[in-house]
Length: 345
Ligand code: KG4
Ligand code: ZN
Image (cartoon, rainbow, N blue to C red; front, side, top):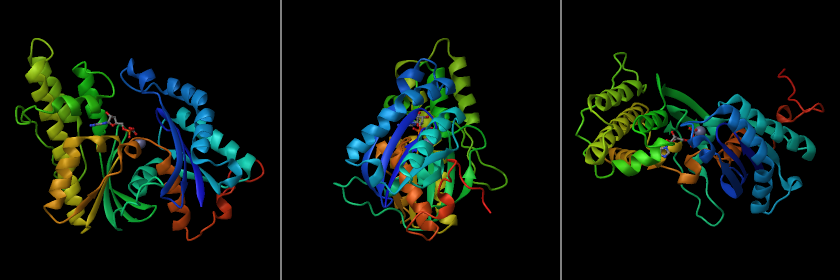
């Protein structure tokens, strides 16, 4: 089954065709990062307007990359949320239009179900990755989300911990902004923290009295701000490198600690790490080592499928359809003659 998916929940306009939930036949993405950089974060209205400009060429480019045309597809999928409402609407309207024009079923996909699916993807010329066994624990960590999931079966995940304030990627972006390092902050901090002394500042790792595995990053952000305010000017050179290394270690330690606890609590063998922050080298290496010590394995998708992309949405759409026990898309997922979904009975 070949599914074309569209993803436009934030600042990436993306389209991909994925076969049987794992083989990425074609993909295209337009990132708006340069447009939003000067504002230090994503400006929702600008994101929506640029999705309108980019989306049709991106779909065309993706189909050309896959060497397919609309009639050869089995279904169209689209990110239904969560995300920026105006941005999501652009993808949704285009997906609806294509599904209606080609007379294909339309599958709405939860953005996080997409991120969780990214560990199963590969290109046709690459071997299929083994992927984590079910059930497994997944840490989804990006600019918009930081949560742990217990994934019981393809397309069936339960959230077991969430952030109580900022997302980890947001913390990276805010700290980078305080230090005048530009946007997005994660990649810059990751690069600059190398060679720093992670013990230079003793930032505390939050623990909740109720034993919850939830995350919190706002206290850490305030602690970094306090260090900056103590100085006469913004830190530079080794002082800056040490501050970034200490901050990054505090974020990574918290993520690793909770993820390992969750994996042990739920007695799983495999753990998945997904989302934009999965690109962070300290987090990847630290989590891999902590899990290996306990006989558990880490699964991380390649970088292009860690950040927002449409291949993960197409893959998750297939998993959802399979999870419903059908090799075809059920009738209640098909558009009716007015181009809207039939109301559930
Ligand atoms: O998944 P993503 O592309 O978009 C969202 O859905 O948010 O993630 C973007 C986030 C940004 O906050 C960015 O700073 C962070 O991922 N990020 C990183 C790294 N690369 C990207 N954070 C830490 N280390 C990195 N290497
Ligand atoms: Zn995302």
